[in-house]
Length: 139
Image 1 (tube, rainbow, N blue to C red):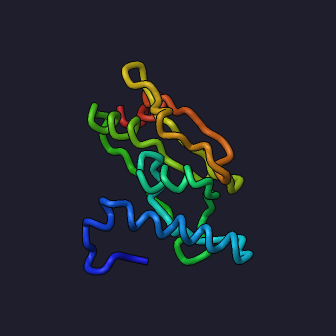
Image 2 (tube, rainbow, N blue to C red):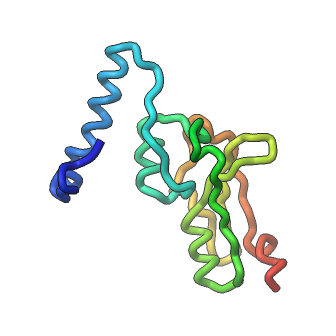
């Protein structure tokens, strides 16, 4: 799906998003039980993730070539900007037992950003990570 010539007005008006709602309606009326809404980056702060979550979609590791790919987030410095980024961008991670979990970073000055909800089918749990403990190896 797409918009001819990437015309911004179709995104602003909501016409592009209506395509998904029409697709879901068509699927329900025609017995289609599963739709691929495509992926998004593993950040709960992404509007795409939150929109799909509100639709009630299930988060899965994709059953295609993207299923073996991972985002490697390497933190090389413990500076305020890095801490700010980690706190305002909670992530999804795959656990050792294959489940998906939400990771909310925080420290004394930066509370976890729970306004970026991970409550959706397929996200099995949430973990809170104290940045003072997480970033210790960098000291």
